[in-house]
Image (cartoon, rainbow, N blue to C red; front, side):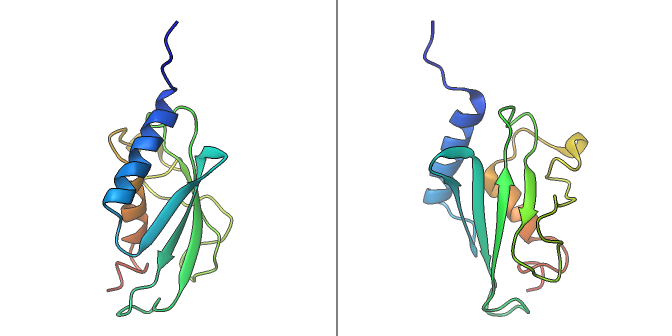
Amino acid sequence: MTNQKPTATSRLKQDYMRLKRDPVPYITAEPLPSNILEWHYVIHGPEDSPYHGGYYHGTLLFTKEFPFKPPSIYMITPNGRFKTNKRLCLSISDFHPDTWNPAWSVATILTGESLMPGWPLKSR
């Protein structure tokens, strides 16, 4: 019997360590201490954007099949771009599993969301 950790847990721990070493600009993200499959992130509105001064909270919900299946992505804070508490329809989310790439990391997901047209970092 081996002591291997499930792939999702192992991969998410690696992604977390990478994010700590090389954070995504204007975004902070961490898993819940009690559940590595649930992450909370905050996008900080850049100074030179219409979102300046704003803090936009969202969640990433991973399944045990990550990285082979994409996460659900939610925006919690009202922001004028995405509906709150609804799964976001993004190519990097479980809304479009056919476009998912298992090589994508949590940083890739956060970067992809923040660069959506009309959203904080794309508005710069």
